[in-house]
Length: 263
Image (tube, rainbow, N blue to C red; front, side, top):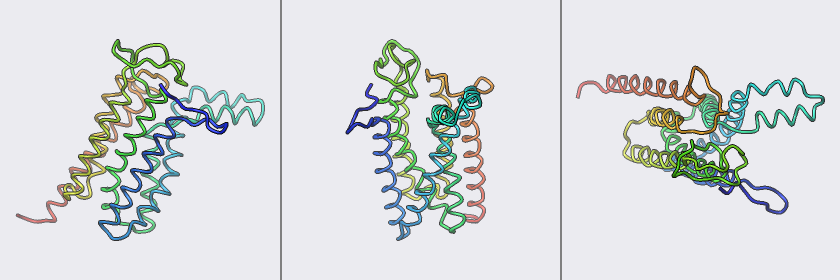
């Protein structure tokens, strides 16, 4: 589609631009919403900065795990330079769920150590994550990664960096997922504005996104993401995301109703 361009001798990828747009929209949204609700946006800013490290680390690690069949290249490298080149190739990409898990772990550590209001912050983070990911999937579409299966009415890539994506019409699953994420953002934002499901919006995000991701994976055409028991890596993680989110939703709702007492 439009994977990138040269600027001052450096290659700039379309995905990087789309992801940065998502960052510069979703992060201010989260910070200003936090400030509006609590009078202080610094806890959200600090948590986002630390969680960004977890996002990068988690996304790269899970990407490397999906390429575990290529690890032998690193062990057979002749020198450090060759080993480093193989490592960049194997761990150089990113898997969304890995970034999400890494970001969640980092954010949980920060909120626990600094005693930040976790329920308020996770409620705000839920629509912010959906908003960011919506832009990220647009970047995937432009770059030609995360492409769909072959369909007669699909989009034909000619310049994708993934050679297997080129030359055949493919379902634009990236745009479908982007549209879903933007719809999910508005749903979670409205629930947040009206103080509905307080302390449970992030678990709702995990449930709804997990269900959608499990289904959309059947229409993905890239087979390098790893498979386990007949399911892709993301489908396998989606099962745990939906189950964990649903359990938390139910348990937390029951606990809140008991604490509220009889109507």
